[in-house]
Length: 224
Length: 224
DNA sequence: GATGCCGGATTGGTATACCGATGTGGTGGG
DNA sequence: CCCACCACATCGGTATACCAATCCGGCATC
Image (cartoon, rainbow over all chains, first blue to last red; front, side, top):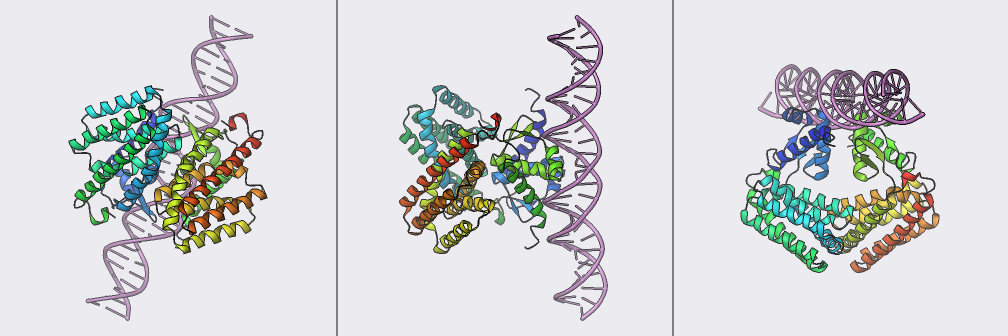
């Protein structure tokens, strides 16, 4: 079990490295990329590159026009659709969570978000912050909701990356997450649903603002 | 544009062939499969096999335990979760559809389901029958809803395949689909939402019944 | 006879060679 | 000077060779 992931580590590592390169805008949105260029850049063969590209394609960080790949541009319309979709599934997810969650599961999430709140590294914080919603979805005991929530977080990942910097935003997020968790723990399904919707709206504003602020850093083809 | 998909055809073809082999129970649920065995069986190299397996993994028709692949067993719990998830997203999808759909789009879907009703080949019929819900989701103008609906249909694809045989079931499905489309066209959002829920419940019963009937054909490891 | 160990067969992961298609830049002709 | 055309570079798709890890079976030993 210890060495079991050794062969996966490299592939996971490549996926993470590629994803990080996209998130950090090292690979600029809208830019065409080729398997062979990435092969040289990341010093691995095309086979794992292809596999990673398929994942990123699924996650919406990479797009294909015809035969060639490109870094996905910021798509305001898509982000709107993602948030609209989130507003459909997440209230229902936390309603189910409020009914089904066990205290120890809630405690685990609570310690997780407190931990991530103490950690300062932006990378860790972002991953934790996104993880919260997925872990809440897991409380619903519905795997479809979990994967859908994963999809939602992944598709807004880059936009949120733009907006992680603000200390105030972090504190707000932590407070709202805690509030949601409290309501789930109290079994208040409707309250949790409302809190989630409010949180979603706040994040949406923050994200769209961040894209607007970053617009000049990104090329014309970087925002659609 | 005509020959543009020539190179894709083979890969798509492999994916379709593999999927068909799984759906038709030619590859039995729960059975372990290896890339090299498939390579010989389908007479293509491992590279496209790997790619197809990744797709099928995502669609839930193939699972991994550790390092090796296996045909996904029928997972009753998962099917329940899929239908529960569908009951969350599809009512909202048709509500949006009822508000946003253009008459020509509805007409296109209507002719499509009538066409598929006339076609007798089970393969074509199944694809059309599943396509209906995805195309309704497209009317919502929300790509997340579309992909989620695609996911839902794919994850129940094999189970529905088991239950496609009945002529009566086909007629019922066609009638319910027509009814849903009528309500969307009339702009009756709530009526369409109710009709979709009723249809989902009917399909769910049908599917679970089909699995129960097929239980003896599938091995012990074929149903979880 | 049971058990433990070792060796070969098989697995997935990776690297690489080859192919046909596509797009592009340079050159020659109008 | 402009346009058409051809050669070449490069792309993604495919096939295949190689590797390390793992699994299984048989043999030797207790």
